[in-house]
Structures are given as C-alpha cells and as structure tokens.
Image (cartoon, rainbow, N blue to C red; front, side, top):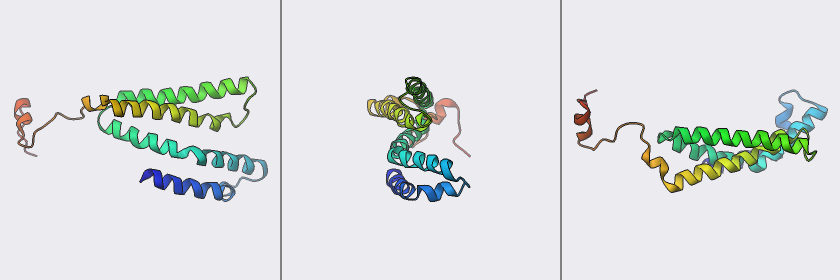
Length: 145
C-alpha cells in the first residue's frame, strides 16, 4: 500500500514539480533547481518508501540497533559519495540529492538481508506470553490491569 501511494505521489510531484516549488515563493534559478531535485527524487523515492516500511517493521519487532546502524550507514554512504563525486568534479550542487538513492540502496540491502535471514525474530519488545498467561506467573505478574 505504501509503495502504491508513493508511486502515485511521485508521479504527481514529477508532473507538477514547478507548481509545488512555487508554493515556497521560489523563482528563476531556485525554482529550476528545486524542480530538478523533486523530479530526480521522484524517480527513486519508491526505494525510500520500501526501506522505511521494512525498517518500521524491524524496529517494531525490537530490532532497533540494526536499524540504527542501517540508517547511519546509509547516511555515511550518502555523505562520502557526495564528497568524493564533488571532489572529482563529477557532480556539483546536485550531489546532495543524487547520492540519496545510493544510501537508500544500501539501507534496503541491509534491511532485507536482516528480514530474510530472520535475525529480527530473536528480538522481543516484551516477554513472550502464552494465551493462558503462563509466562506471567514465572515473572510474578498477576495479569490484572
């Protein structure tokens, strides 16, 4: 569902990029650069949607440390790639957004690897309880609210 919503929103953003940017009062060169950024990211934002959905699932399952490392790794890759590509003269001002999909790709690889290998299943937010409440008695909980 999030992927479908993202594709629809990105299609609209791509088509109406100038109109969206003009809401912020930008004109001339700033309007062109903003439209360029929106159009570029609209092509790749589906990746971010997939990463955030799976990342939320893993965090909700209690696998927060791996997700923190994933986010930090993606950000580090974005910054390092942007710095390197600007230093080599390959990119200029657009390096800030051109390198975002690189980080998202790394995050997707790490998150999907973690999900499909099942490492997240070993994490737990709360103790495992049976439907009869047997686990509560072992921890001295009454089960009453």
